[in-house]
Length: 150
Image 1 (cartoon, rainbow, N blue to C red):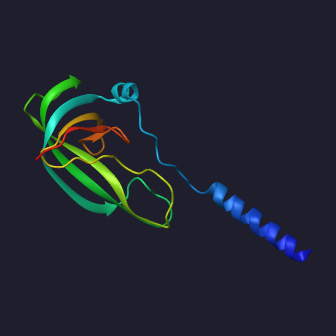
Image 2: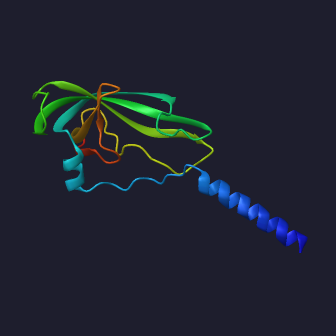
Image 3: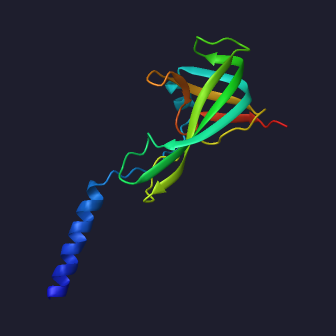
């Protein structure tokens, strides 16, 4: 009888701890209509350069060690479907991210996908990040690779 009470108490404590944790699931891809309505800027362009670095996550803030790979895409604008403030043939910087380390392993946001390569042609659905002063793709599928480069 005492063993059952101990197990029940342990289960209740575990359930309460799990229920109070900040647990997020991967976000489902947005529809074309959602991407268009949430975007401030929609451009088609060619990826001229791509750079990346790893930094402490600003997305995942729960207890643990969390690192993200930040991608800086330099895109030469070939066409503008929505928005203003950029011109055709202008180069813009777009910052995307993907998780690299999650200790402890928790389900959560999986970042942008797919990440294009150099010389790929893309359509990007963007929002202006006022705090960071950069363009960011709509999460999670605000980057669409329309043609692979060489």
